[in-house]
Image: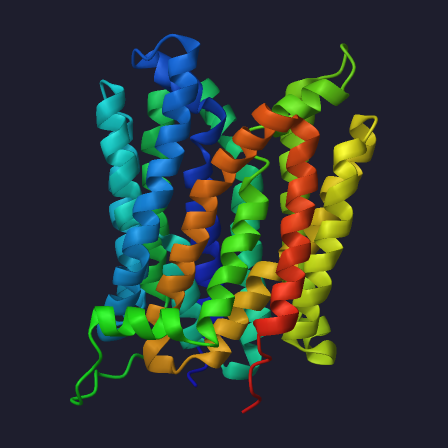
Length: 397
């Protein structure tokens, strides 16, 4: 193993944090931008906001396995470059749209060509030693959470300074810079493809979907992302409901998102010590049921202080779920098929991201805001049972 793997890992983490920052810029002002390009009334703004988010998730779910299969043939670094450099161009073009149809087309293209998390995860799994995979996945996921937590805040500040359209150009430049960092400073030791016949895309896809090892992990990541995304549409409204009339509701809503992300980042970067003692499977089971236990009382909080405390606690458990599952994928998959494996798990994550907000909105409209938290606790408990029954501890080599 080249002595440069640590440098490569750190550069990928910095690039991924920067990319997530850039993607997060759009979140605070998506409805405002829609109004700026002529969408009205407010009901249409709400509809198009949902459609824009869901369309990206769907196209990402469809194309992630394709890019994963190409990564196994041509190397993982080139896939990171594709996702960041092309993604930067697409995000910048969003600053030039004149109507919502053009914006929707670019959001779909964003899902088709980006997928930076899956590409970076496959690259990290390739460049780090096996015994450092757990810690490396934690570091990578921490960089994702840092970007998620800081993106909306920084995006709001930049939008205030240069306008909403200008923010897309800044975000595009940041993504391009991330790609250039990876190009210059990340070294992938990718062996030339074997002359033996490689399985085709659909054959690889079929193997993954039938795999007793990979398929349970895909379902795990789908349910984790569903549990994360289900609260997105109602969280600011729920914060408003439990706050007093004099409270800074927008600040508290930002803290509710940010507290979860910050504690997830802290957990992700430190969880590997627990894995060394207890193993991946036991940590996953503990995190599933722990998250469920702290999600349920969110339905019954009486004030914002209780809510922020519970959101922070939930973040600790969510911070373990994704990197631990990604590490199991890497440890359980032959190196020549890791790109395809992470493409499939990314697709499952994207589906969860697309369905979650729709499910959350439907539950809230039908049964009230509290039902969203009760349902999420139930999903996480079911996930714990799923892990007990079907997820296998990776073999030690």
